[in-house]
Image (cartoon, rainbow, N blue to C red; front, side):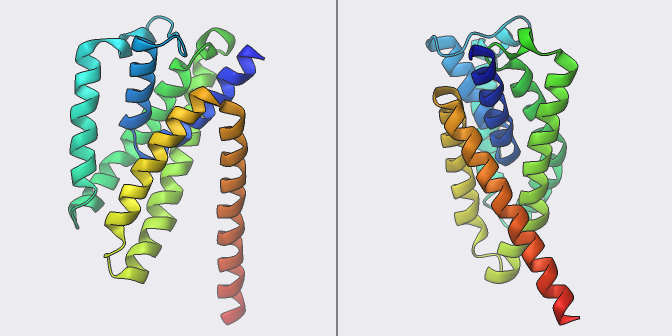
Length: 190
């Protein structure tokens, strides 16, 4: 069960990285440094360095403010298209017990795909819909909600990984259903 909870935790953390690249990295770094909830293997234990933790805090602050300013948030999302999947790959591979139970290439690939998928849904479907329906006024509250969700998902992924796995599956199913439903409605209109 230890390996399974590590894998479920890794999936939740990498999904969280699709929303905000740096929050799950910081959560894992802090939990690994100050608690026994996560034990990072070499080379991932470098995340617990004071310098890395400080850098993550600075990057979170930059992304937080960049994502709240109109026009800059679009540039930020473009940059994050590369950063979030990479962060998802790192966090998946670094997560508790996973690196020893799964080949590193497979772990990195899984994290990249999960974070990349979450980021793609966010930046290609959710954010454009919010911008179009609210004239951009809804972007700041949605961005704040994404940051809160990323933080909660990161913490709960470590503490209660099975619950997070169920939530991620249900949310993904809901998003797919909504996209399928929208495509069918558009097809019927044509």
